[in-house]
Image (cartoon, rainbow, N blue to C red):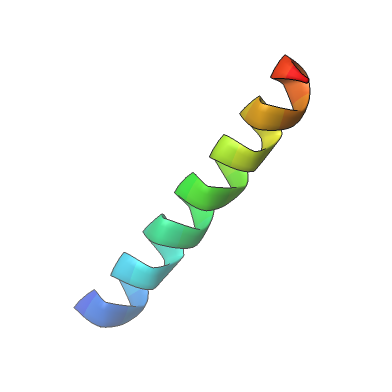
Length: 25
């Protein structure tokens, strides 16, 4: 369970950073 939650958090952060990067550009 912890592994799955960790992966989901990483994916969420990655998507958030990608969105932020698009906004900056």
